[in-house]
Length: 270
Length: 292
Image 1 (tube, rainbow over the protein chains, first blue to last red):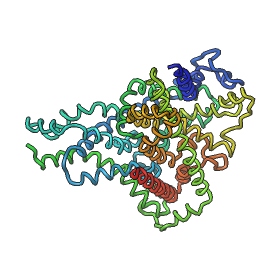
Image 2 (cartoon, rainbow over the protein chains, first blue to last red):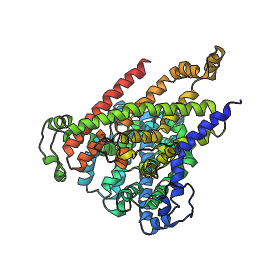
Image 3 (tube, rainbow over the protein chains, first blue to last red):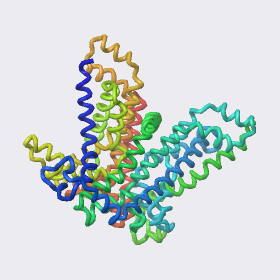
Image 4 (cartoon, each protein chain N blue to C red):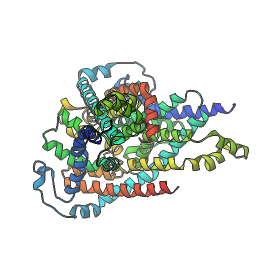
């Protein structure tokens, strides 16, 4: 095929358009403030410096924010994996009253805009004394309608014979779920786990209103407040901060991307 | 042996944790907000949310007759009407390019195009403020090479919204692209081969064979993208705060501002108006989806 070269040219140009800002940010985080303000701007740092990262980790309290983000994201991910797989299995494989009504209710909430629940959730969490606490950051996200939907789809695809085999062997109903069926959904769990972790890591609005003191900030909150506060003009610090937020999830995404894209394609959901 | 009673008991054990959390943090707040939207609850009533007065439909009347709310509704419509088709067009083009044109490094391009989807909006804002900066910005520097003097994008009443739309397309097209890729892989190669034999060129094959066969996928992505874009919020929050002069203020953004002012009753009524609009539009789209 002689005409493939220009197809690759378009693809590469597209990739440049998508990736150029990322690359610029990464390179910019190693530049001095003076070079960042230079007109015309430079691509490669003329005098690469790690000063921005030093400031970030020594002057700003980024290790703390990093810790908070990690704790919250891990807890939220664990909760979703446990609770969504449990109810997903029940909805797909077990007979009980109200099963269909429950599933319809869960699906309906996929459509409710975040803004609808935002205010009462804030009032509720504040009244429960959970403002500015880890439970306040974590509890509202421990389950997700998307997770239920995803897990139910996967469990539906598994044969019932496996359950009956377990029953014949005298395994309890919960044992059939935990020891026979759950291990078979590893690809679904991987997809859900990665997407949930990414979502929690990047979550911004809720932590912004719930984390009121600096020791409870997550990375996006800290970065947003840095980019509007007195540090707003310190571009190098901002770029280094953005790199610290982005790079861990990018690495994670690159490692697990096959599961994510497969899972998204299967469920047809964002 | 299959005992229905044991099965039901197990089911409730498995369902219970979810139901408790779901009622407390999703279903409860949905109902709560509905109640709140008929009250004059303010921030100062936070500790006594059940002692507030009902005001009937006052909040809804106030919201719908508010000049700024209408402006926000117009801006949201502008964003959706321009942003959704653009996002889908870019996503479809990228998907066709990757599926039909690229044999090598396909995974690399796919991951590359998807990266903005998994990136924090705050980090994206840091990047894009540099792209859109007036003088030393990436965009105006590139335009300068062609002798074009670019505007101060985010400070311009005319250009702020198109800038945010461009940013949203850049940020979101990857997720629709993945779904289009799945759809394209479901179209057998024989369909296109038949078109080729009949003498159809690449554009004709795309227009008359691929697009009609992708119709369910296109409608699906327009539903999900539409629901997302109707809630247009994060871009103005981190880039413009709704300015300049409310030119990028969306309904969600205005709702959030009213929340910030402590007008909880008014804020929830606005959120509910948005919810009704989303539900109606989604319903219409699903009707279209089913008919074809």
